[in-house]
Length: 497
Image (cartoon, rainbow, N blue to C red; front, side, top):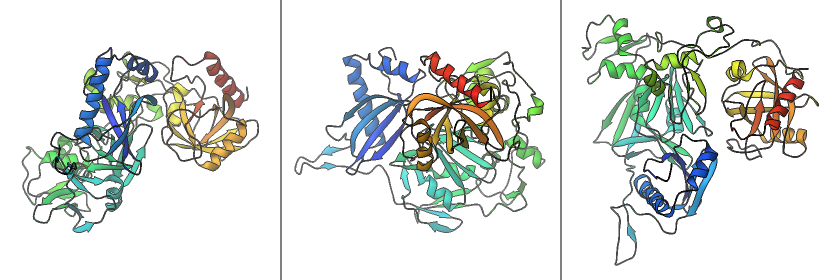
């Protein structure tokens, strides 16, 4: 930051209802380590603090012109930089106090006079759709349910997604970039109100294969896919183009043209097109046989920076997002982690020492799996694992919520938290030898008993826990070497060594 405050500081935000208004959490966009950034933030002088306060007020005027904000918290990752109480409501520039009554005259930024119809049926939503900046927004979870799609979210990375058939859309809350089957696309930014994420209905619908039309007379957005044939074909309607159709199905224009032997981009209404299977010609992560026991990094690698995507990194190196994902064994909805090293010119190191289905139940001895070469590909964000304590044989379930140098986990339920705490007696950093059971594999590991940082599950404890495998490291360079060695000793104990 170096003493300069810029307008585009805020990567995303969260509104938390407090009864008589909302608390606003602003997440700052920084490429620094969270702690390093906090120290730099603390050096801002009085003049720049005034400018920052003005930026925050401008941000509130733009994003929440008709919302009562009681308090503001400024975060860098999991570090709280500052918090303050709003002494008075922030009014938009268009708002002026009425001198006669002393009441502020406001006009809602959202137009709720809109209905959503799916295949001819008007849908009812608990969280009402609205129009904002000429874009119609719908509550993501309810809309997904109405069209038979599955919706997921990850509070740790502030990301959400919606999947239907062979199409997967994922994005960070508040971002104007989304990933459709791994390909980055620009979309109107999502809006978060309370705990509800609202998404642009046209972008989501068209990329899931629906047609979208607005009936101004009835204020109804009509969404339908009735023109899609069961035999994987599509009947062209007025206003269609090859680009629009390819975007709906997550394929390229060239794939669509090849499947239909088209020599040009010209199509006409009622023409029937064959829709190739999404991603048929897109490179996918290779089976292990294509990169056996690869322990060396390729010649060109890259350290991921905050805000990087597979697409943006690919542009820096003149390659494709598909190659970035392939060389790093990434799934279509997977996101890059800031600080993570990735491969650019060839496959990242990976070996195979354990195989799915080797065991039918959890055990108290596991295989010492190298985290960097294998473990991080076996236990990924969102996975549910069983953790068995080596000393007692007791076990509990946990969810992997993130991490790139080691796994960050949370007990799955309050019952699992109670079991975990019983192993440690009191919450403490000293780790215990454990074995991870996932997909029929038993993996030697070590878990510490001190909750800290991000919390995503209502499980009776605030924070998450460190889970190490062989050669795991800390996320921070300031972590005690003794603590890291304690984990490695416990991993070896869990491996029976």
